[in-house]
Image (tube, rainbow, N blue to C red; front, side, top):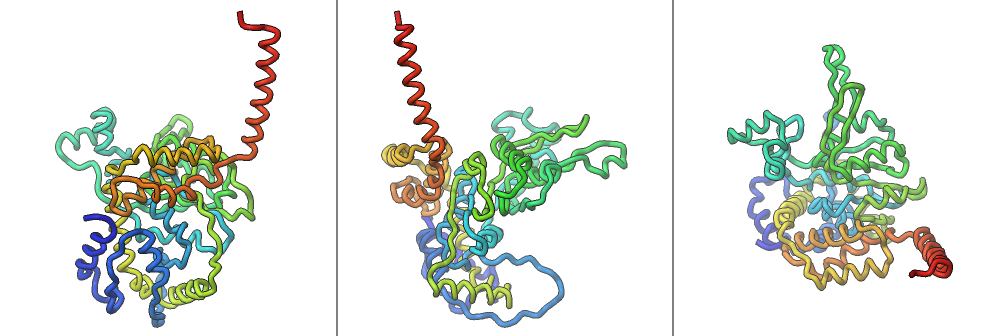
Length: 408
């Protein structure tokens, strides 16, 4: 089984499990062979306007289909690669309002893969025992592991949204008020603990309170955080993929924060008038009958989800040849990028891109696709000027020292 072609074939052979009413009538699309081919095909595909649906009066959350988004190939590529390999870092979407940034992120729920999730309150996993022995888990999990009981179950990755008005206590957690009534203090989990092994989305991240965003960065960097409230303390794991979006018209993002994001995507409005009209048609159809629009893209959605799972499975086997790595390092060197996160994002993103196409070796084309996403907005004119002044002053300093105090 290699790449999109094989998984697409398996998916089309299993359409009976989805249900006949959920697929486009007469859909006999040929198998897709790459991420770009899948996204291009769906962008250009037409669908019949749906009939009005009956109003039941019950609110139902139905995200707009991710693959129904018109255009914006780079944004969709970055988000899909982030799902395949979170080690590349988070995703920052930069663009004016109304360009589909938030819609795209919320649409990821249909593509999110399944992962092992701990059954323990403290988040103990089998991998903890493999890495640190029995002492790395709580006594209950050590007993269960010894008795052959599972410590985790398969569960979908979830999208956790951080509201812009979140307080620090909402993010890290605080005293559980119910425990006070029982005369026993207990820490209540915050949004960061809920985001462990999930996606954490912050809309308008450039407007988030500095105290909150500093906490986010520390927790993301360490993979855990500790809450202390008086005599009570608790530590939680916080291994999440951070996705942020911002409108640069509303304020800049601190360089420290921007550096934490692996992929940087500039989201522009659609320029082609036909694409803009097609985007309108899809949104209007979705507002009339979201179920039918979701059904129209169900085949491609299931193919993409299966391919993300397949790519994650082979990711650990993907290698980067020395020659390809040298080319990437040369690009970074010529751009005068100081942050080592540039290499991490470039190479981990290239590995994800290769895995998405069913290959176990990164090539130069993978680097070409990833380089703009990974390396833009990494250079700093301020730091360049600062270092130039530093070199000039350092040279003068050593010249004076050598003149007055020559080496013996």
